[in-house]
Image 1 (tube, rainbow, N blue to C red):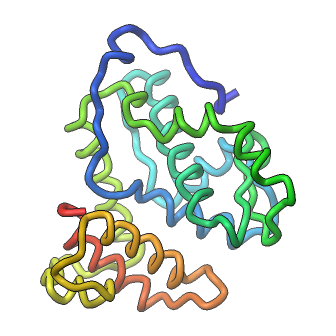
Image 2: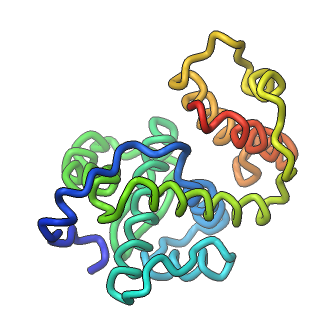
Amino acid sequence: MLLAKPSLSAEAQSAKVSTTKGDNPLIWPVLSVLQASNQSWKIHHLATELQNRGLIHQLDENPGNDLFKRNFLLMNALFELQGILLPKQWLQVKAMEIQIFRLVPSNVNLLIMEDTSLREYYLDWNNYDTSENVVRELLEAFWSSYKSYIGLNVNLMHKGHALRVFELDESATPRDIRKQWRRLALKWHPDRPEGDAARFREVCEAWQSLRDIA
């Protein structure tokens, strides 16, 4: 089962992959796929859908490592999105049942506690079994694909303009920028009830200029 935590080698366990610049760009395509369908998704079907959209590429020459790394990135995106959607919606992350529910279950705290170990594993880049530079290059490649996918302007927005788009000023901290990026991306995502594709693209363009300092 893809959701099970793999046993890492001593080399993998000792790999130091600190927090990388920028969010996992699979978060927003995953939201699009899940919001556009009322059905639940199996993890491998979701991966195939993202691959068909040109957003998941080969990550390792070794087929086994490639499968693990694809799964890691997808699970990382799912658990990140789960936290972003709460407390208004519940994203169920199970191997054979991935689905967004408009109503948050009454026992949501218990459900979160049950998945704590798995969630912490996939949100920790130390478990990706690679170097920080490789993870950074990997996310840059994903962002390049995503920019083409949603039609972003290739020219970076001026920092001052980007901050205004984020409704922030020069005193904004990296934490402020990252928090506002997620809030606005979720607010304007075109698959949300009040979403706006043009505003979403503008927010993404602003993030492209600000994510190196966030």
